[in-house]
Picture 1 (tube, one colour):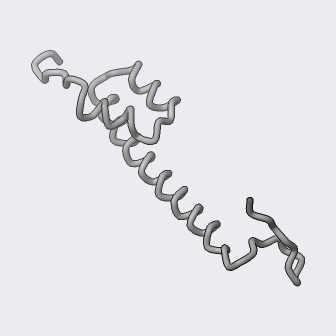
Picture 2 (spheres, helix red, strand yellow):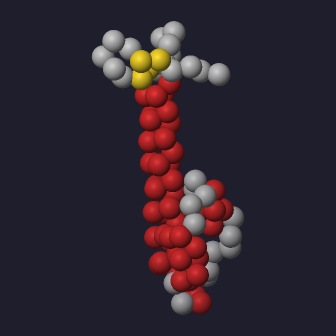
Length: 84
């Protein structure tokens, strides 16, 4: 278990030079947000263009880190343009 201690300036820090963990976590969290927003935007755009109101609401409400969005874009069958 990581133990925290109070340094000279009164800030709580991690011992043994482990200060890289927080910036790494921020970087990973930021990349996950960008990844999710890109896929969500693409799926919302496609659902809106095809008139899939239920899918649009599902994508707007549910966050799945892009998994559901990727499935919608690449796996689920596309509507034919002649049906419009």
